[in-house]
Length: 289
Image (cartoon, rainbow, N blue to C red; front, top):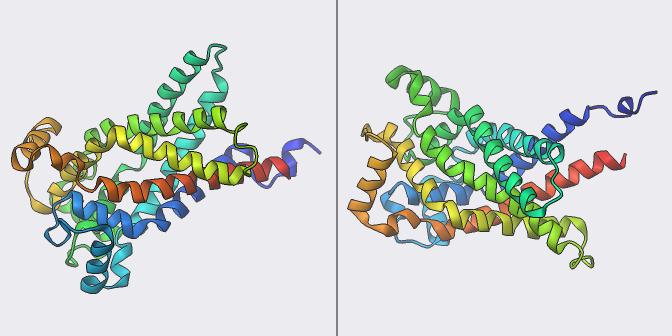
């Protein structure tokens, strides 16, 4: 029997499955924090100048426990294929193009990470938009994912589903680039020094650190893209990414670009830690059986 017949799924299918599961589980775990961040970033009045714990309490008491997961269905529909494509494409490119020089290898990983993140983003972007809108609304204008998609197309046209895509690519491409590359570098440099810790715990640590480091570099771009996305709710229209950035700065100063940063650390560190750990664990399971 051929080697490939030993497995229910092909290697490609298993890698995509691993990425999808890791994305859905990790984002569901931090969904209440993610909604809090979006509300802070988009100037929802009830959530400004409050701590993360206070925001979660307000959300629970005013909207109920179910509200803490608003937009998570759309987020899982987005993040599962996104993470599958991002992890899979990065691994394929990284393993295909090997360089003897370590600096060249690191630079290539940065490029591969940016490309993987960009392609994954373009593939699933409408769900990212819907996730943001469902998370931000405090009424029940949009009843769910399908209702939101249909109403956006009816009111604004099909191109509205890609509102803020360019801003998203400006942020996601470098974020994916740094996140994926930092994880690989941390594993290369520190795995042998942390041999007393099992692989899964190492991946939790490296994944959390990689996400935190990447976020610190790229966070302002995430705030800007959220503002562009929620213009669909407000009906406001700005000319471009630059015009939106200028308006934000004029209204609230430099601090607006870092609103919700510490809450985002609370989301990104566990989310990326869980995503990398599950993905690597599932890949190892297939290799071992």
